[in-house]
Image (cartoon, rainbow, N blue to C red; front, side, top):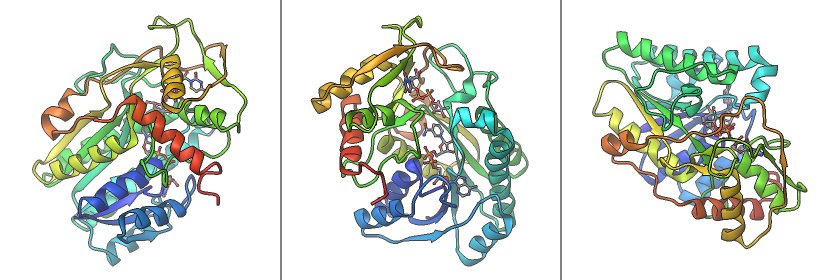
Length: 337
Ligand code: NAD
Ligand code: UFG
């Protein structure tokens, strides 16, 4: 298939482009590079030996998206083009709602005009809010407490409503848990701008000496060791999940919702210790007060994706720790060479 990957230069997008190319699909990327570098795409092409057609466009701009669809035959769209910093979304709600919701609407509008009817959407476990664990796809969604989370709920709703009136459409809503890790080559990986918000990029920057100490946000949660528990998933497993979901959309119409997680919870300190062990390093840390808005513990019920897509996360927490460090070590300045 010929797939338009919106946001394909980013962290999850670049790994998904690689897996798509390796699976024999053709890839067209639309990305405005607001949180990424074109270098990621150059490296994906190097690793695969296959070309990517790149459009440096903002997918909220209808005329620019229209031009892509006029110039290229497209069989399906994967939409990664979102802003994703939870704290920033509280500070800049208009920017977040505009970017994340209008991008979904614009893609839908142009796809409809061109008769393209397969849509894979990057959603998030955040849509479950503070639900009972494990999170199951059938749960009623609870409020998310921040604009970022609401943009995911809204985009899911928009796509569900579109699919309800377009009998030929098939939509996959993929709810990611916590992606970490990198391609085992260490050539592509997560390249956060500024001080990382997320745990693993912070840990790797402490390991490299770029940051002094990790701050562990709270050790008084009702969890195994008091620190927050998450379902960390290797980005390569996640990328493979997208390709399986896309293939499923060729067989089935309507809306398909899948958790993409491992089904296992890992605490902050467990992750830190796994990282130390996998890489034979020490990560100095301080226990600090809880971070506002954090949930104590969540992980996926990952059985639906296994049952229906034949997909199951295969890589271990050690793989994730080793590959994250391998990327950081080889690219201390990210894609800035
Ligand atoms: P990322 O920032 O690395 O990738 C997003 C890409 O989209 C970037 O290359 C950015 O430049 C591009 N982009 C953003 N807005 C755009 C626009 N209007 N037009 C064109 N390009 C645009 O983030 P990521 O971690 O790869 O996340 C990809 C998607 O997955 C996002 O929608 C994010 O919300 C979602 N998600 C991420 C996580 C996570 O922890 N990384 C968890 C759940 C969901
Ligand atoms: N943490 C620390 N210190 C840090 C960073 C994080 O102790 O410097 C802790 C957090 O308190 C939490 C755990 O590590 O317990 C994971 O935190 P992340 O920021 O890495 O991830 P979150 O689960 O908070 O959020 C991520 C994404 C969201 C997404 C959510 C669910 O950032 O966009 O997963 O998919 F919505």
